[in-house]
Length: 302
Image 1 (cartoon, rainbow, N blue to C red):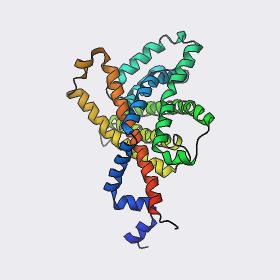
Image 2 (cartoon, rainbow, N blue to C red; image 1 turned 180 degrees about the vertical axis):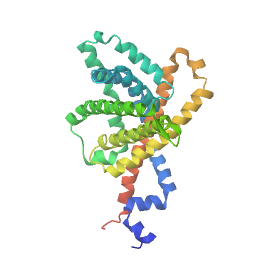
Image 3 (cartoon, rainbow, N blue to C red; image 1 turned 120 degrees about the vertical axis):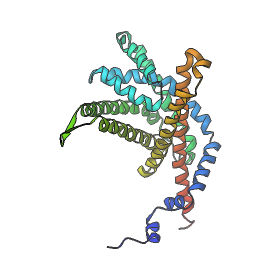
Image 4 (cartoon, rainbow, N blue to C red; image 1 turned 90 degrees about the horizontal axis):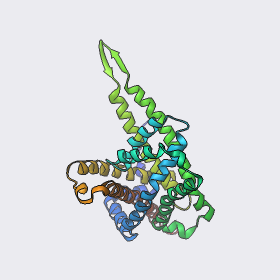
């Protein structure tokens, strides 16, 4: 069976995809201009600030809940490994604070528990508001019920807890595989490298999944999975590049510890969160521009 000619294959693509493939540079430049017009960096700063307030109580609540199901050491090790994806170079300090808090978790009363639950939801609320600015065309068309917006952060926290549990179990299995070896033709081949590669791929897949789920849930109205995946892959690729640059910068060139002293961890975490938030919102802007691209590609009256 002969393959379809290029012209026919192009016609099978969605109008947005055809327009994007014809002029990728124009689309990228338009996305950056729209991101700037929407004050994307200012929105990212707000998201990062509230994320800094939210991340510790959120992690404390999740770890306390999951420590009744899995080993606390394995849970903290998994959390530290994947916190490196969010705050490069600072996961050890955060995990250390979590360990100190967990050692005295009997002091957590219901007032402190409710307070931590409230602060852990702040970042999601601010992120929803930031998304509403980028997806303004959706907010104008339809609005989300107040009860849904109020419950959404807590449902997402529950989902993150379940996701962390699954990742911990899978990571433990992969680490066990890494301690094994395969004997073949009189030689022993360690599976440590295979285990490390699988753990890295698990992290990347989890990163894309989380970002895609954010784009599916946070904007008002139903978003196509393909559009959310486009934004998720874009943000994940940009963050992977940025993350490695940050690790190299903080390890070789940065003098932040000389300038900020004891505040170094907070400053570095805030900077990492702001860059991550900017790329998260930039991925949302890609989706928004892609939706507009589809409407512009369809002629009036068609």
